[in-house]
Length: 202
Image (cartoon, rainbow, N blue to C red; front, side, top):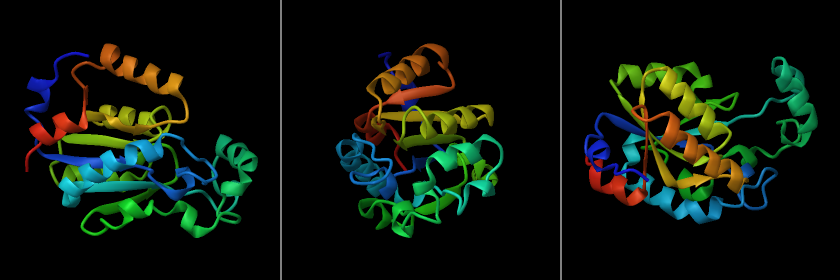
């Protein structure tokens, strides 16, 4: 891993964007992500430090597959148990360890993988003159990936806290870490939670 110290030393005008740490992805959930328990304490520590600067995203499934366009309909026909017609409302809530930080942390709901599929997120960040998004959450190779690429396209600097991500796939996670290091230098930085605490000071 390259030396990130010069990059992280300059973190300012940032928000912590925590992706989809919901009960549906927790142990026992329909889409359980095995790593979530392992990274949750790290994410809790980050949120506790930057409570007012944290935005949680929640992936909100449709009531019925036909409520979404195109290929999302076949996706949710396959995962009909995840639609709001079938899943308990609690399944889409934040895990309790993080929900307790709201407020002052904020929540935005999204219909697709990227947190920016809710257009109000970009508007909010631009209005607040945010230049950097610090990303944690689930899953590394799906919703986190989509959010990171959207943020890059919108011109935000992205700082990924690599020990605060979780995935169902070791192969997918490792491939994404390699891609960020080799293909997105200058737009995406990888840091540890310890480095983040040292170099992002409010």
